[in-house]
Length: 490
Image (tube, rainbow, N blue to C red; front, side, top):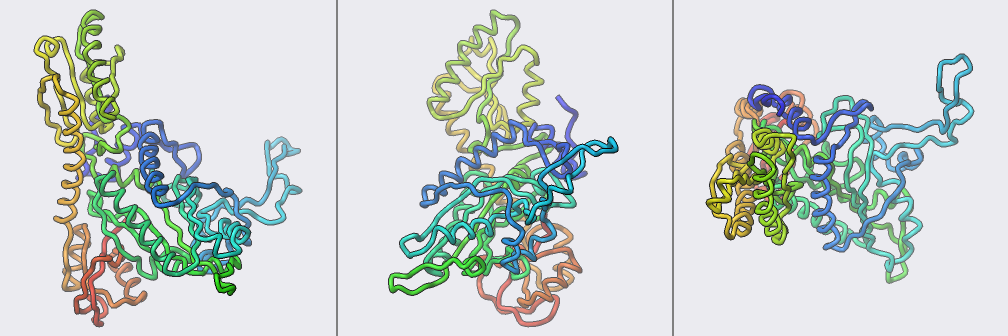
């Protein structure tokens, strides 16, 4: 196997990159800022996608697909939206190449200039709302509850695999409603779904809250978010849900006839999570031995490694191993039997430890004699020998325990690094230490910018469960009625 990983304590960024590449999740591509998601990494994303898709459909949403290209004039229709995304847009200006006459190779054909330039989608609100204008005439056409799985492009200067890339995969939901109440309820429902997924599948605790005005999605009236704390003490925004009000409906003139026959603008929401969740998963659970995966998202939950000498022993071990594999699969547990003869058992052990497989079973000729099997947990690195009889039920309970243990461990980490600051000096000290810091803020954008400039900390959210509490803003001295959540962030 590859050399030992860099320690998290020594160089967190290098540790992260080594896990992403060493565990065969992704690698940099020939296109600057873009990544190749490798089969093992994509298998994890497919698990995420499948669970989220199920949750979306259970709440009445359906999937569709909209164009990759957006006419530039569409993006210009919603002022805040264009201002928020203008600096990140990739623009298509021509549609053909030709061979240069001086032998320089292919060049852009100047005669093939587009009549209107096209934006490679950074997000799809504009193209979707232009479409909704054609679909919506009456209250009978509402609500529209659509999600799409797609790729988007945001031209990033500083990239990191999964966390921030020029092109990334995501889902984006776009809904249309007859009333403000329905649109707000949709926005809140979807952030609850993201929080549910983070907790019960990613084993990642999150704080739900509202973004400040400065941190809202461009074009939204309100942005809900889930914020997670990574093992280096930085926050990571793991999902957002936006109440768009009637902004896009007005920009694209999307009106509907009410039951009373009046014409009104449609109310909207949009919401999304991306392959950034892969980065969150890595940084929430992994250790200096490699990736650690919660069982519910592992490409395979159990790997069986045979210990043998010669074909005769391999055949004997394989017969039992395949019986164990079948019994586990009947419990809907995903299993890989690694009977490759190209690598030794020790090499395989190290490989699956690096790849974060939740449980590793080792089975040798001595185990056949004793009716036993060795079970190694990835989360605790503990090994124990079990009787093979009823092993499927034992493994099922172990996987449940690992899933639960990973969440509790991550929650304990977050609780130990969540603080309250009651003075400016204390705030600065805690922010430098790393973690979540609850502190009073006067509610102004000016003070928020000042705090960011002086400390590099941002308001991650105004927590939904925050209690009213009279206090004083630590930077302006003005009165405040609640604490908000600060941290340095990705």
